[in-house]
Image (cartoon, rainbow, N blue to C red; front, side, top):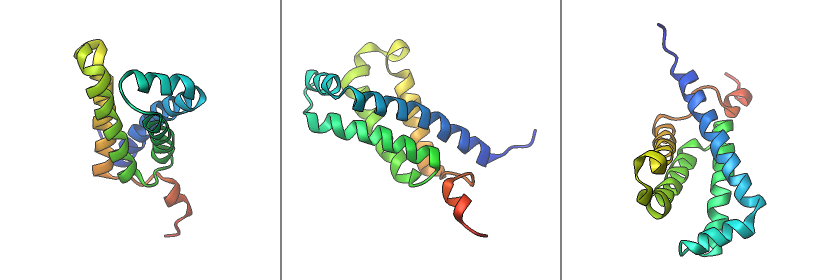
Length: 126
C-alpha cells in the first residue's frame, strides 16, 4: 500500500480542528458557565477566556494549516491542564484517554509540520 504523509497530516489536522473549534466555540458561547467551571477548579476568568480562545483559534489554525507548530504546542498545553486539573482523578478509561490522544496528536503536528495541504500552499506560487 502506498503511503501519503501529507494526507495523514491533513486528516489529523482536520480531526483536531473539529474537536477544538467545537469546544472553543462552546466555551465562548457560554462564558458564564465556562467561567463558573474554571472557578470551581480554582482558576480565574482570565484562564477561561484564554483557554476558550486557544481552543477556537488553535483549531482554526489546524484546519487551515497555518502556525501549526505554535498552535500544536498551545493546544497540547491545554490538554495537560485538562488532564491534570480535571480528568486524572477519573482514571484512563472514561477519564483522560481522549484528552491524551488530543495532546499527542497536537504535539505530532507541532513536530511533524502541517504537510503540503495548507492554506499557505494554495496562495504560494511554485
